[in-house]
Length: 440
Image (cartoon, helix red, strand yellow):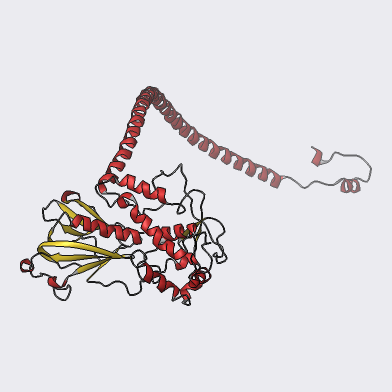
């Protein structure tokens, strides 16, 4: 997320561009910015001037000839009259920045555009994450404190006068993100500030800041002084992280990465604070460390280049540089794919030969299979005939068996009853043995 130094660098960049270019025509809003208001301003010639305060930035529009202004064609109920637009207040969100490009190379997410008088260039507010906002004639946020870069005395006094506020009951790393007292301080700045003054990030804010009420000077700068000093150091970095279009943005970005001492650096620890933000630090975390606190992925030199960060919050690389880098990567991938393709083609030709041979064998097997199928059909036909004959024979056999049963039954019915041996002895008192009829 762009922080106080980034907003000031953006203001300096706009003023540098405005010193070389005048602007003309309408201020154009992108069709992608559906939730943002139109800026009903149009002039034959106008100039721009920018200023920043913490995490807010104003762009003043100054017509060079009021008589040339045209009347607005927008409905009065939707937009302000053209002549009442004095400035536009920007909040950058997660990824907002300003870029100067040619008319032919306007970035996709250029949501608000100011066209130069020469018709060749356009100054755009670019925000690919679309969290940025602008307000017509907006005032500095009433919930934001003094800027610690240019209003250091007021900034320091505002903090020390409000130490009884409930905001200072929290851990110091969380209070540093409170824009009511630390306007412009963000995630990477709080890590660098606390690291330099060796304060545990989860120490209570009030206990850290109350000793400063004694106004005792020390050799080392205190935490409030570092809020001013560290941001000034960022401003002094060459190129301003890609805002200077006359210098190589990759070198400028590398310079910023080398300047960092704690934020996302090797050997540092991190924990997720109570607001879900990652806090980078070294040493003990402090007594207000969140319960069941977790750390997030650390920087791996093998996976990331030396001049890159985990997030793209500070990526202000112009479109050309990004395209060139992506083009190189795509070309390398293309060459690998081509090499793999040639190998695959050779393998495919070999496989084709094998398949053709297999196809010949398959044809022969198919012919043999057809012959076998014909023989099988004949056998099946013979089998069906045999089955029919078998069924007829079975019927004949069953009929014969039935006839035999009937014949036996008839014979049994015609037989005379036989006498038992005891009966036979009684009937033959002489004791003469006679043969029983049942033995015949």
